[in-house]
Length: 177
Image 1 (cartoon, rainbow, N blue to C red):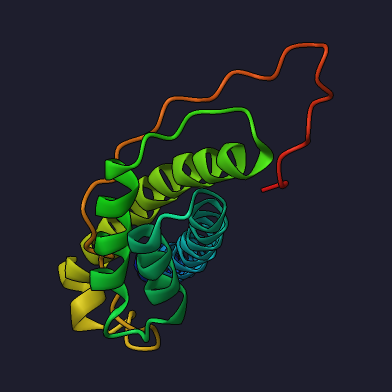
Image 2 (cartoon, rainbow, N blue to C red):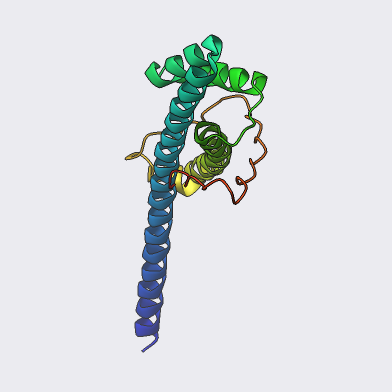
């Protein structure tokens, strides 16, 4: 009889350990998938911002802003951070006001970039924290996933929201997220 309790105790400990390892592996996978998703979302928002900046630059005939927007749209992976920093600096130099649809779209997309960057940074930090845990490193649970990287750009200022046009002017819906 005493031997049976000892065997049951060992089996229970093995089951608990296996459950914990499975939970940890799932958590590592989930945080890496979320970081990859946030990276794709940030990239999409940056592309929308660059496209909107190009439209506004064409309308207002601002050549520096247009050039920065085109560089951001055409930049490769290794040049992307630099191009986005240039675009951010150009956007900060331009006064974004007015109720025209292009400016409203640019302001909305700039605000989304700020939020997407914050989410991306948080998820990359979480993924890197999960990778540093001793058990995760020892069992190499994160080996299937590329190491998440921060997207290091200047902190874009969140432009103030442009108030909706007066009721006399029909509102132009913004692009859905």
